[in-house]
Amino acid sequence: MVPTPLAEPLKFGVFTGVELELQADDAVPAAARMGLEPPRFCGQCGRRMVVQVRPDGWDARCSRHGTVDSVELGRR
Image (tube, rainbow, N blue to C red):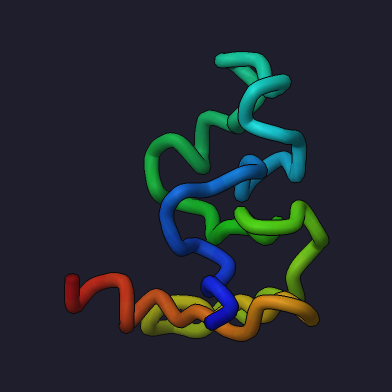
């Protein structure tokens, strides 16, 4: 089974696309740390995702790892 873009454990930063081991602690933008930005990169492969922001949330799609929706994340 292929993991979804935000499935744990993540290998890449979802706001930077950099490997988590190499990412600096201050690399994540302040707006993202506050939860105001959707993820822009796949946490599994680091590829840029297609992100659609809606009034009720967002959805993001990686060409290799599928789609994730903020509504689904809120149910956990």
